[in-house]
Picture (cartoon, rainbow, N blue to C red):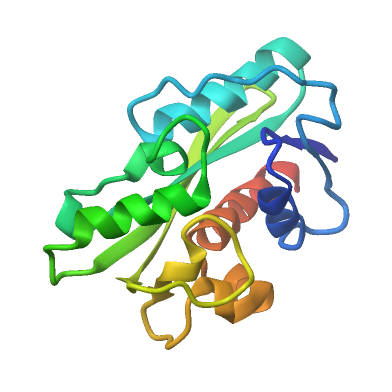
Length: 193
């Protein structure tokens, strides 16, 4: 089965590819020749995920899923949330985003946060979405070389290392994206069996 993951982000693509069964051929937006940027104009993760999935389904007539993820910080009322990738500006600079988080948390003792992913799916005439959440806390220094985005400053609950330190084997079992993907795969199996 061919399935498009509506992303140009190779980090996300590889993360999800490792979770999919071998009989599903996962294609990226690049693979299908979609070079245009799909504008994420939604005000929620759910809206943005559906915008991307529906775009591919409408313009390319291919079965598709899309995700949107965000870091939601308790002390900042869920910010940066839907704008996590562009928190410090449209250039999507990971370092600038981390620095802005640290600056906004400077006067807060509560560092609790969560990563949340929503996956929107458009297969044939069916649409549905799944959510995955991983709770944890932020730290005031970067640790680890792996991962991307906020991974070097996020320690998931029950662990002593950041996502960047844990490596992809562990992260792909416990992350927000992994949890949402497992729900997605369970539902997909029901549909294609």
